[in-house]
Image 1 (cartoon, one colour):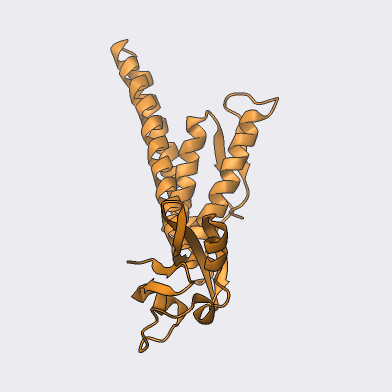
Image 2 (cartoon, rainbow, N blue to C red):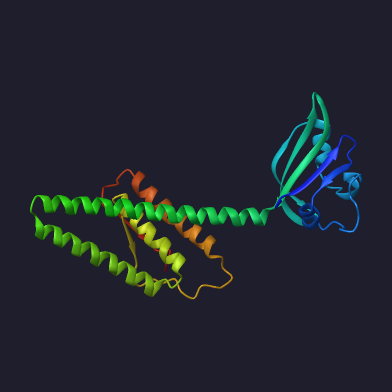
Length: 236
């Protein structure tokens, strides 16, 4: 199991402890820890509080043995009697990594959804123009769409070498169009030479949130009109 597991009985003695818990907490591996009092092994543990109160504790963030952990503590019942407590925990940084991955996947999904919606509308418009025999207008719309998209892609390739950031901006551009807004990226701006130790997922999250807030604020503004422009200067 990836989670550390520790269980105690009604006397506060350890009945179960798995290898993940031993490794995470830096406990001795050459000693049988079962039967030892939990307060002797982990003086800062709150398992005895749960044993006394019978109240479970969920997703508590604690520092234990120099580690930042997310801990759940549940009382064990036999009828109306509390017979012990079981605690499960995992390092917070591991959970943060999972959360960041999920956030990035959500951003990619939103980007793809926006693109699919945008191009679906364009295809329906082009199909309608062809059906009414407005072929010149259909060709003009296709040409304009291709030109605008290619210009944006060329700008992003030249100004934002990091593909993750470029993908984020392209997705937000399509999202703005879906909302009948225009996200303008200053052609003189650039986002190059980023520090290697700067986490890209955090930067994408910050940039994406800023643009999303700008889009929502523009939509909700009292004077908002369809086709209004949102200027993004975060890439300067």
